[in-house]
Length: 83
Image (tube, rainbow, N blue to C red; front, side, top):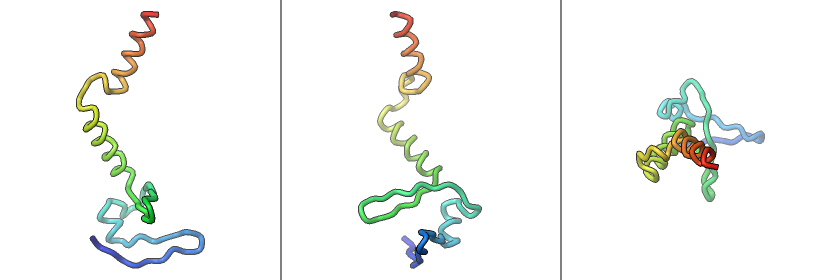
């Protein structure tokens, strides 16, 4: 793991090293998510957060057709038509 010392300004601004931005696809800028994990601040790209969420969803639900939003809505429509 690379580590580079930096500074946080009084207003809370930080500058990410160019090699770090390039390594995670932020060389042209982009949206990130900040997470506080104990005493660590983690910065993750939106793509990485979405990919992780999709992987966890697939791990938990597998490829069950009823696990999709479309499957859920179809099930709700069936229930509503029975009432």
